[in-house]
Image 1 (cartoon, rainbow, N blue to C red):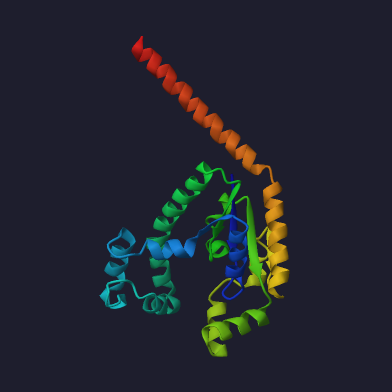
Image 2 (cartoon, helix red, strand yellow; image 1 turned 90 degrees about the horizontal axis):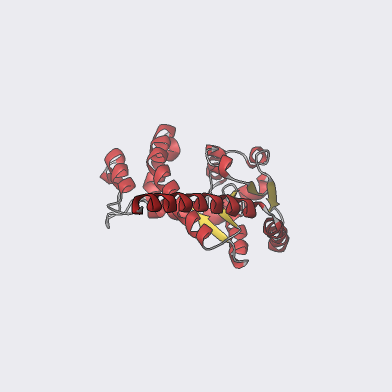
Length: 229
């Protein structure tokens, strides 16, 4: 099994691509979903966030007000770094658990849907391939304004807070251009899926894992024989 990193930009259409991949039966691990799970009340990350950011970022039911917290980290980069240092280790631990689950189930590859894959650049070394969902700057701005009901200046500020899509293109091994219609995007996803399915990289991973397991089994067997005799 091998790992495929999937990323994009705000309003670039990554969710559309993920929907098609899931329809094809692909294993997709969504970092955003995990990020919401690890900050549920009484969990380790939740307690640390409340300690550093205060109870004013909580809703009446005790859950974290993501909008309020987002407003803080958007305008204060040092607070964003603090939040990332709290949540990222917990997110990565949960992602590893899910990767192991799919490995045991026999999947050829697992797609890691990570919005800031190229910004952090810490996980790309573990990916066999990286995929960027791209769209042109004008389309991105228009979609964001329409989707979130934002004024142009606010939408532009949110786009500027991320690494530009044209810069991310340099780091990706595969590009899905979502500037056109859904059918065009779907065809590109189908081609990508076919390429990944045909890859033999997963065989080497399974052979390596099998060798390790066999080696450990042999070692345990020898120890048992030693103590029994």
